[in-house]
Amino acid sequence: MKPLIVAQITDCHLQNDPSQDYRGRDVEQSLNAVVDDVLCQTPAAELILWTGDLVHHGALNGYTRLHERLMGLPLPSYWIPGNHDDADLMRQRGGELNQRTVVQQGWAIILLDSTSEPDGQGGGSLASLELDFLEQQLLLYKDYHCLIGLHHNPLPVDSEWQDSIMLANAGAFWRILASHQQVKGIVHGHVHQPGDCLHQGVRVLMTPASSVQFKARCRQIILEDSPTLELPGYRLLQLYPDGRITTLVKRVAC
Ligand SMILES: [Fe+2]
Image (cartoon, rainbow, N blue to C red; front, side):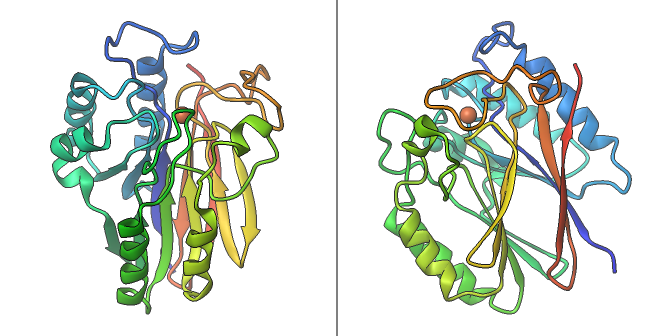
């Protein structure tokens, strides 16, 4: 039973000037190392999901640079914005990267924009049109297994500063999922740390950043300093035809 193999890369925080670092890390170099690692996997990943905060200050040259890079990869990429992104610029620049539902091998991967109603602190929500889109896609793909991708965490992570900027209307999101049992998993970014839990029967997977990591369970932002946990990371998922998900977080030294 051959699974669909998906890579998720998130929170790249690319700078407009690629020679500039982000919180002390060369994020161009760490993203290159992450992408190289994805390309080395056996069996090969078949697509990459990019789940937001791709460009730290959301400017056109950052998206142009990333778009060129992704178009040169031997596998397709699909991107959604995070709170640091400019969603309009991404839509303008993205072309096929903007595809919102990816259907392959019995799975429908539904990608959501959670950057509506920004609170200025990093929070965001799903606009009512986005919630309608989710419901429509779940009805359309009721006979498929579904994986949902979004930027903001739809559950608290027991970290005071991060829980204050989680998905603001998570209740509405979970109410939709409650009546669609084919949703097997959710992947998100935003928290810059790994995690894996079950909620309403759905696997909720948090993925470390390709840039810097934040320490878990803190009242305020603290950069991860563990030699292993501070490394750039990404997630690999195996989506099986029977609806099972196996997954692991990969760390990349650079
Ligand atoms: Fe981020």
